[in-house]
Image (tube, rainbow, N blue to C red; front, side, top):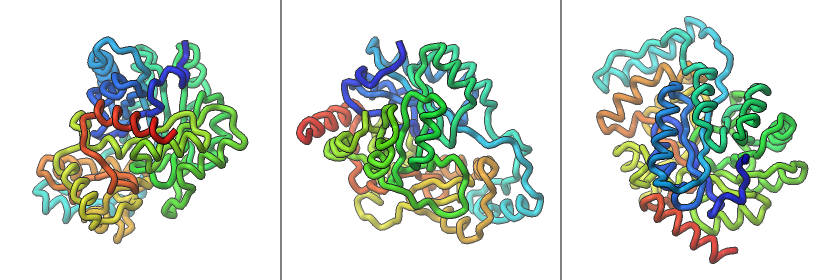
Length: 355
C-alpha cells in the first residue's frame, strides 16, 4: 500500500541532507523512533543508493517504518564558456594552494550520476517515498513510482510551484520556507539571493488552493515549532538542522565544531551563497563563501559543485570548516546535541505539550 501520513507515529520527517549528513544510521534511528527517515542520494551511484537503502533497512532492527529517498532534478547537460571556467578556476587556485592540493580544473560535463541509473536502484529497492528537489521529475517517473506503490513528493518554495506539483500528480508537497538550511529547492536557478515566505506563511499560502498533503520545512527545531506548523495546515514537518549534531549524522568533526561555536556565540551569519555549488544554499558563513562570493565567479550548478569538490574534500580531511559547505538553517542557535532517537522522543514530548 502507498504511504500515508497515518503511518507516522511522530509527524516528523528527517530531511534528506545530501553530501554527508544524511546516513543510513540517522535515517534508521528516526524510523525506529516513529518518524520518516530520509537518504539524500543525489550525488550517489545506483549501486551506492541500493547499498544505503539496504543498510538502512537492516539498521531498523525489524521496525517497519517509511523511508524517503531524495534525488535532485539536475539541469540538462550544458557547456561552460571557456572564459568563465578559467575565471572560476583562478578564483579557487589560491584556496587550493593554502590547502596544499592541486588547483581545481573543471571536469568534462559528467558532473553527476545519470538519473536513470539512480532510479533503477530505487525501483529495485522500493522505498516508501521518492522525493525530488529542484523541480519536477518526468511524468513517466511519477507513473512508474505509483505503479510500484512508491509515493512521490516534490519541494515547493512558492504557491505557484505547489500548484504545478499537485497538477503533475505528486502525492505530497514539501513546503520549504526561507529559514531552511541547505539548497533552496527553487525550480529555476535565480540570479538574486532568495527572498521567500517563512515556513508557516508558505504552508498557509499553499493550503488555500492545494488538496494534497503539505509537509512544513524550515526553521523547525522543537515541539512548539512543530505544533505551530501543524496548526497552520501541515500534515507533517521536515527537520534538517535539528539533526546535524546527532552522532548518527555524517556531519564532519570540523563542521560540527563550527555549528556548536556558532550556536553558542552567535558570532557568524547564516546566509545564502552560490559559492560552493552554483545554486543558492544556506549555511554558516565562512572564508570560502566570502572569498568566492566577492569574485562573483561561481559557475552554474552543478558545474561549480564539481569544480569545488576537491577543495571541500581536502578541507574535510584537514578539519578545516572554513572551506567546507557547512549548511544550516536560520534557527541554528537552538540546536541540541542528542542521539537521534532521544531527540525524536524529546520532540514528541514537546509536541504533546503544545497540541
